Length: 139
Image (cartoon, rainbow, N blue to C red):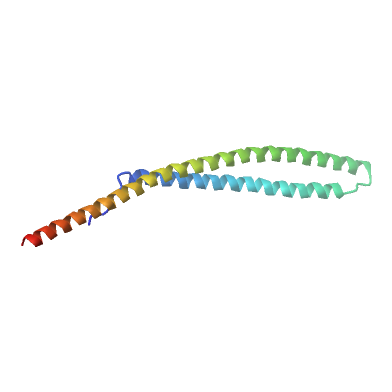
């Protein structure tokens, strides 16, 4: 019995490679986004600790206000960065899902071709058995 060969096997492998690459890019984008979320959490803790401080004199109070202002500015920057990373993560996820859908389409073609090939094999075997039965009966 002949072995099944899919004519678009190299194309299927290429699509699979695209899925793997897109999945890797998505996971990297998610990791960057989670890292910034973690940094924002750490930043919020620093902000809370700074608010708990009770400066006793004017210079310390001014230093605390300056520090809190800097922390607020850093938080706005982190929020902006998180928005950008969220957009990048969503775009990477979209590319991954699109690549996965394209791969599955070619995979369905392969499965259909395999089913057709198997049906053809069964028909050939049946034809050979019929031929054998006819020649046996004639003898």
